[in-house]
Amino acid sequence: MTSVADLVPQTSLDRGVLPTTEVIARVHRIQDVMSKLMKVDIHFGKIPGTPKPTLYKPGAELLLMTFRIAASPSLIEDLSTPDEIRYRVTVRGTNQVSGEIVGEMVGECSSSEEKYKWRKPVCDEEWDETDIGHRREKWQRGDSKAYKVKQVRTSPSDVANTILKMATKRALIATTLVCLAASDIFAQDLEDLAEELRESVGGETPKDTKQPQRRSETGTAKDAKPADSAALVAVGVIDKLWRPKDKKYFAVKLTGDARMFTQWIDKHEQLEQDIKQFVDTERAIRLTYSETVKDGKTFYNVIGVAISDEAPKPDQKAPPLKAADIFADASEPGSEG
Image: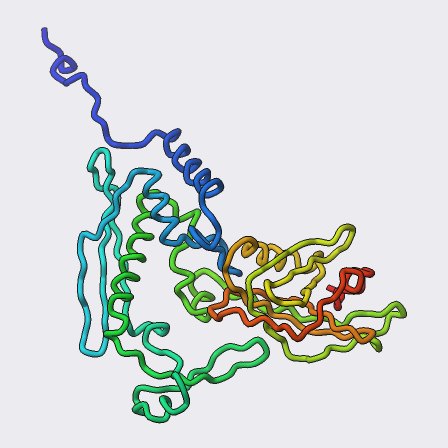
């Protein structure tokens, strides 16, 4: 007699579910590639104040190559108007071995975004001659107070190719994160956002730390006074970051700048870690600092760091201080964290 069991095929169906061990192996592979091959500010970057590193296009391409995923635009939508260039790009990830589609995501970019729509005028004459509807004054956040800058409209056609490339890049990175399930490791596009927007989409801009007065040996601050109460800014590439032996502060030096910037470690350890992200890179940064004068010497107390879009402008006027002048004793950095 034939049973029901005999009529059921004795083959198991492959539901395409990955074993847990393979999922773990993939995560470990991403972490291994990140630690051994990826470089900060080339493949990914740590935006100060944000919770996790942001994946850049070279890093996405490296990960796609590692897992043999071919990523290519499957659809490009031109959503432009006479006054705006706008593209929406869909990028599809395909396994190079099996041909299976493993993910697909969309990226969009527009010439109406702040950094593409407006630019600094070449001169005041250009500003004066620009139509009133194509110029503006915009408030920007300063280190001590807000200030206004003059801007004029960019011609949309001048940035058309850039807009298309940026939309493709955003879709490529999004596809990479989805195909590899790497969103818990990397963030996306935070470097493209203005500082004001980062605070509302997952990151916050590092805020300057208030500098307390430094005490003298007698417990007063009579011989220590700030040279300028407003926060100052130095722009440059890090030449060296180190901790003097047996001292409780760290020191930073920018390439081409004679000054040494110092700060206490115990209450500013995170600041040291943020600065460390830019060591051995060519990325220009903005060091926010204050000045303190003691015994005729000026000490530079670093209180904040951020990525800079400006070219380095080293201040060569400051005389170089000897190590003995800076590290003479525990009160020398210029403030008491």
